[in-house]
Amino acid sequence: MGERSYDIHIGSGILGAVGSKLKPYKPSPKIAIISNPTVYKLCGKVVSDSIKKAGFKPLNVIIPDGEQYKSLLWAEYIWTGLLKAGLDRKSIIIALGGGVIGDIAGFTASTYMRGIRYIQVPTTLLSQVDSSVGGKTGVNHPLGKNMIGTFYQPSLVCIDTDTLKTLPQKEFISGMAEVIKYGVIWDKSLFEFLERQRSAILRLDRKALTHIIRRSCEIKGEVVSRDEKEQGLRAILNYGHTIGHAIETVTGYKRYLHGEAIAIGMCTEADIAGLNSKELSRIKRVIDSYGLPIELPKNIPVEKLLRTMEVDKKALAGELRFILPEEIGSVRIKEVDRERIRKVLP
Image (cartoon, rainbow, N blue to C red):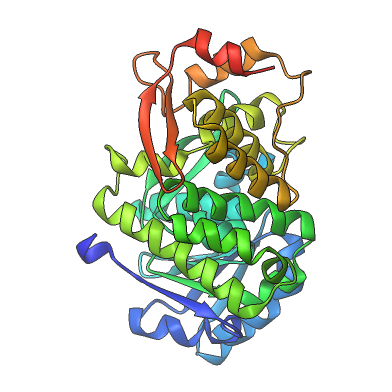
């Protein structure tokens, strides 16, 4: 990505060094921390103190916790807070939290005064391996997820693996869906690592965690560097997301965590692909082994899912496009007719 490239720091105890990492950017004194109450209670003081220690003035902008708050209404709330506090074009925003915080903080950074720097400090596995890297920002619309947004790269990503110790197991497992995705779309060796090292990963072994986070970031970085604005190759990162996003939208973002919906989407899209039974079984077995759902409940209306998919960003001229596995480590992008989808969905 040339001049838009940035460093990703991964390790233990990084939160306390965030302030010192601001200095090379020579920002204005006021630094905004965008977070939610849960994350800020756990991590906010460490980050805020490090900013003060570095000689800057932190401003806390706290929004409620949940996907339903990733909206234009709450983006406006953030813009208002930044304006009232007098942040200028050389100020920096720090996104402290999971994917929701990262997306909305990045979106507000990209639009505030036509764009100011922001730093991703992801605190969930999902955001560490996926949403904090790649520069996609956005908010949701009642008709679809992430339909309003920008491509806007962060200046830096700081991943502290210690934050995963405070994460509810359900949230950690949700993040594993995106790690599994990388194995299916790009790296058979990573997929095999996930098969072999399940116990170590689930007990939060530092070496195993660092490996899957680093490898996930490497894969996403490589894909994004080739296709920053999703004109072709980058679309493969959406494996499981065509159906997964539709599930989230139809259920009002309240029934499933993002990774849970994506897990169902990956299994369903592997079925649509007509993958050979051995590869299909391996994908479903790994997803299931990490405690993620593998089947779509029958009480979600198929036609409603289809209508939601039609307004998805991945649809072109009304045609539904899917990322379909050919084998573990390789996928293709293909338009799929609605009858084929109806045959697979319950």
